[in-house]
Image 1 (cartoon, rainbow, N blue to C red):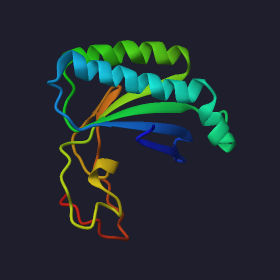
Image 2 (cartoon, helix red, strand yellow):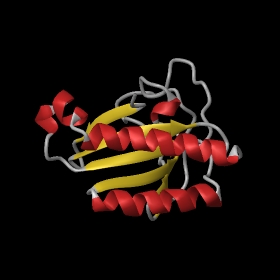
Image 3 (cartoon, rainbow, N blue to C red):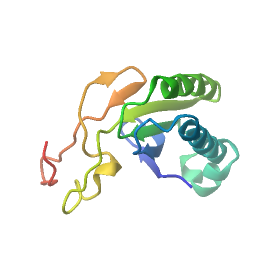
Image 4 (cartoon, one colour):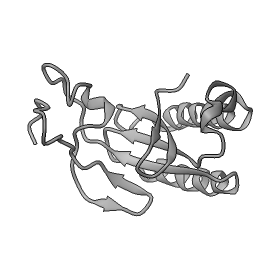
Length: 145
């Protein structure tokens, strides 16, 4: 099961997002769980399930985003770097997005939830970025930016 799936029309890319809100302190078990989830996402893409469910998006580039509340450990970053190299061979992007700690906001965030990626902060890093807060100038999102 995918955590989130979207067509980013600005970049014309399909984004499959997975969320990790736990701190990166669970060692081998957490990396194994990440690997299993990543394998499921890749299977969804390569085994035809994505094409079957979304035929109108056939041929679009695909990026998997690991959206995490905490900076990944060095060991996790090493695993993700190796996975990124392997996925590149299949023309699938992999990016880590640090979204900051997830907290509840009354009424949600920009109509959704903070875990949906609206709030966060920081600077852009190569293949590993910190989400920039988004606020629609035509509406109030209820987040404290």
